[in-house]
Length: 127
Figure 1 (cartoon, rainbow, N blue to C red):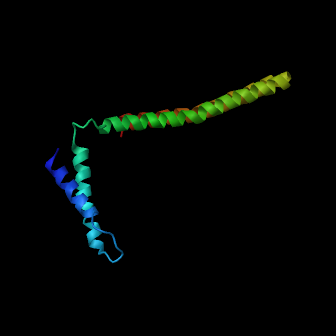
Figure 2: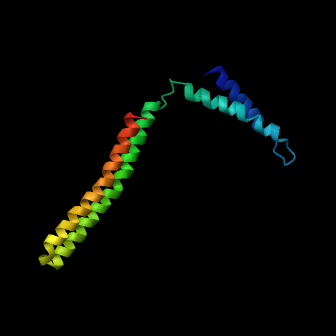
């Protein structure tokens, strides 16, 4: 274990063992912050702990964006096609109007999924 990390943990544990009262000086509370920050920096800098790298976090964020961004269009397309089939079952003579409006709605719903794909690609490769 890193000496800096162990020292920071010891300082943090000693600072938090003090009894907390309302008459306590705010400077004593703020003295806990630097050791905690040093401990966090030491943990983040440790490469052998199996942590996730910055590139890995970018790709996880891109996957999350694409996953969440695909839910809305998939639900919208399924709902739209289902309602169009119901309308065609009730009124088959209106098929050209229903089909045209359904295809237009499908294009708009699919555009949202494409926007999510573009954002995921930007997160993965640009940022």
